[in-house]
Length: 379
Image (tube, rainbow, N blue to C red):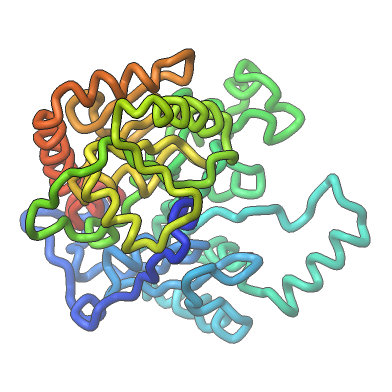
């Protein structure tokens, strides 16, 4: 879930001057490509940076989308850059290509011929970078490709099947726990899992699927408070509550709990500036963090960074180094009063919550460092 769902002014990420020149070293570790990290040259094309954040000095990034990003305006791939990029690939200038998924196919069967031709024309002459990923099809076969799919949708559109065929690994943020489900209803043949498992292309593709960490390194999170902040709020939540049924049902229960006066509950009606959101997390014991457009969410980790414990509905996705229930967070079911019962259980031991938040931050620091993520993505 994007930060804009609960923060009115999400921060803009910009690499520091130090990051722009620093070469990341990984002691006693090599890429799965048998290349030292400091020597690897990466081409990343997609709707969001990932490697550009992990290895900024060694990654060439091109933004690919039908419209510009909401927070940043990175370079698009124009026709001239496309020609130069093909030449660079042929020269062997890159050791690794990281692609983001295409949101929509170039040709949509549910649209008229006029609409499709108009879309192709506008893409080629006005929005050339919207299908920049296709440059990878011109890369030499010995250049490995990985896919970094950070989209909220729990499926892989058929327009990305060629990436699945060509890549060595397909990392998907919202990867269903049953991996076969990423192909459901993507074509007329994929109406059931039984049909999917009969297709050799999809069987081979499913073997390449891996869960994608939401966080591209610890640097994407705010630093924890230097000094402990007094806890004055039991439960904190701010967000757009009508986007999912999980939020709608939970919001009703939370309002009922607030009306009892049993706990100190902070429920702002409007979205908050990001700095204010972090301050309110820091002074709260628990932060309700229900799923939004996708299950994995920045709020889970930002709450932990601020010393709060997130309360999250049970996951529907496969996860990378997940937060453990009752050790790092509280997971609850969406049925009946499970959310309220979880709040009651958690707030019985407030000092235990402090230890839980510390354990969760230790877990994140251990598994979301640059070296761990790079080794995972390239193994």
